[in-house]
Length: 297
Picture (cartoon, rainbow, N blue to C red):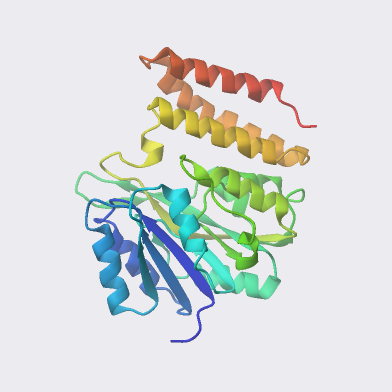
């Protein structure tokens, strides 16, 4: 095998029905100089077995089983410890890369020399017949990624703060020398996304759709469980910490505040208005108060 240029870290927990499509999306890449670390986060279904079978058949895959469920942050961190390639990317095991994703992202960084590149993504929504419908690029995703930009800074492109996911990005491995995901909590990628932007010398954006993000029909995705008080608290904490990271970059921080007010607060407020636990509403009220009162310094 040609020495790989990029390691793709693929964590999965009880996502066996979706693993074949995720791994096929890697096999079908137009750029083949990749390797993937498949991390089973203590699954109780066949996720780990599927990972091991893939590794046995294709040397580009390496399977790793965690002895117990530790969460996405810890699973990704375990993968980062094993990276030896110049570039790093992430793909959750229930999502899919588009065929040219690695070609476009790695190729862009090889051309520009930037620290990382941000691509666009769409949402796969389940249909009654068991298929999935691929949606459009949402406005905040387009604002972060379009038009194509090379070697920009956060202050030059504050709308990049709307890209808060670990996937849909490829970075140079050195970006992760002192950066890791928070462990033991949900929405672990939000604060990391803002830290990447703040610490980058320069980064790139491309409007190409590089990932299709799956909404699971059983409602088990984190973003489908926001009516749970614990999930809400992790969500609010992640957004708050992300805003703290952005202090000192006033336009970028305000862009993130505006997007939270437009996209997140109304959605969560709808849940809060009919939620049986008053603590849900109180937590959201307190967060909104901090949004309105916390100006950049």
